[in-house]
Amino acid sequence: MTALALIRNLTVTYRRDGSEVAALRSVSLDIEAGERLAIIGESGSGKSTLALAIAGLLPGSAKIGGRIDWFLSSLGAKAPPSVLPDISPSRGEIGSFAVGSSPATLVIGEGGNKGAISPLEGEMSGRTEGGLIECRSQKSASKQSHIPRLGRDIGFVFQDPSASLDPVMTIGKQIAEVARTHLGLTWSQSYARAKGLLERVRLPDPDSALRAFPHQLSGGQKQRVAIAAAIAAGPKLLIADEATSALDTIVQAEIVALIRRLVTEDGMTLLFISHDIALAAELAERIAVFRHGQLVELGMTAQIVGAPAQPYTRALLDAHIGLDTRPLLNRARLRA
Amino acid sequence: MTLLAVSNLTKRYRRGNKTIAAVDDVSFHIDPGETLALAGPSGSGKSTIARLALRLIEPDDGRIDFEGGDFLALSGAALRARRARLQMVFQDPLAAFNPRATVARVLDDPLRIHGIASRGERPRRIAALLERVGLTADLAPRAIHEISGGQRQRVAIARAIATKPSLIVLDEAVSALDVSVRGEILELLLDLQRQEKIAYLFISHDLGVIRSVAHRVILLDAGRIAENGDARTVIDAPQSAIGKALVAAAPRLNRTGP
Image (cartoon, rainbow over all chains, first blue to last red; front, side, top):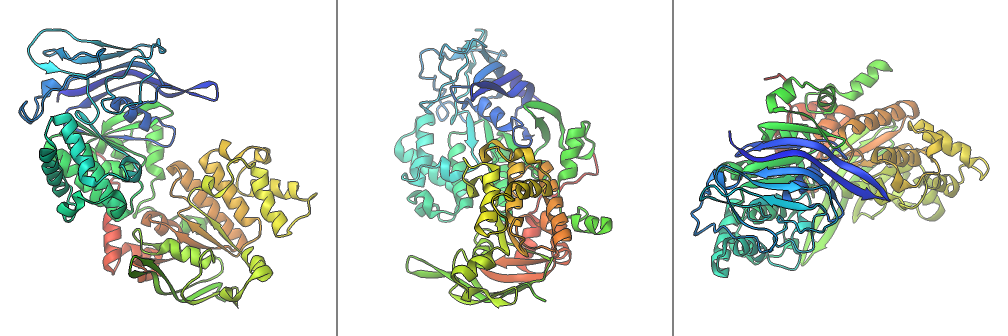
């Protein structure tokens, strides 16, 4: 397998009430191209911080150390360049680099306060990273590589679709905007693409859905729209951060099936962030278990679930209450 | 004796020109010391039933008998007195409490409002309540927003049992907790039920948890009862379409190994 990203010694520290809290401590992790990788953990484990760090969405107050090496261009775009133009980041500080086998590398310094602007921010204005970021690359071959941009290279699906969709913009425009921004399409091409995406996420009646507003849809339908927007520019990596946690069980199963299908059809890499080890195990090929900001255990799903090496992983598995778990009620009766 | 009897309960909402029955002719009962679970997809009416049973909203039709009397007929002082026997714990205690209040203040309110303990006696009662739910008395001066989610849910349970209720409505009360904490809270609820004979109306979307702690279950679909019976019998072999769909959608953990 080839790597999509190599995360090395990633450390993220937040300031809270005057003291520093480490949300991630020296995390090293490889994301393989095309894999479905689940990041699981309880609250405070750092799983969402990891997702935000990868997407370049950490707040400006966060201190970041370590590095993430990306191998985006070596994978070969699925679409021809005319459809997926390699748009150089608009910020002057960030270049676009010609590399061959060598990756585009983000070196994130500990220096902190120089206010360098994240190359990942794309159109997400107002968000900057605290760390000093230096981009390194080696000119060796003709292939173009770049630091990933949110929306184009990385699609992000959040837990609450009501919060991630604009309440006063039509569904069609919200999806078309992504395609227009990142693929350089005209509005009419972008709307045509949006309609196709609504069909792909199986929203009933895509024609009228294009003109609908988020409040006219159910929670599950809104999440389908958020997924359509996330994949509108054909990203290599899809990050789903607790994307099904606010949905009821039946809708959750439908959205998980949808994510699995889309990721397979488009050859995307999936990072599935969840507190639910059973749900993660149904979807992911590999599982990374996080606790207190550290990577506790990483392995193939069958190994993590069937033969966990770490006591904490075992404890998480034991705490799962499934449809075949011996009822607490019976155990209580036995003790009584 | 039946503790709570709900008969032909109906609640309709207007949406545009249409009237939708959120709860449609629902009848059930709960015995003392029993856990009855309500499950169903979003919009099936489970939380509306909880709010009707608590009289946070009034039904359009139907009857609720609680502790042998017509609960819907009560008002004023009689209703307040009866409400001490019927408590609630919600999913997010931070939303239910004033976040700047201290733990002591949250527990002092029910003791004072229901005249359960004198001012001088209340600090001792608060300490006893905290210990009853597995916390220590030194938590009393802490602010609600400072303590962990699991501790907050224990405080919510302590407040609920402060008035010595016979029934507690638990609306997704363990759904937002980490799995390691969830098991401890469920054990606490079962322990309180055994010791104090408290009945629970247990609302959850999680069939695994319901199968683990409930005696009986009602599966709701579009405001109506689709299926009801012994929790393990129903969940192990659902007969209704919605029951089959809910069971099929529950994630399964295959721990047999690689």
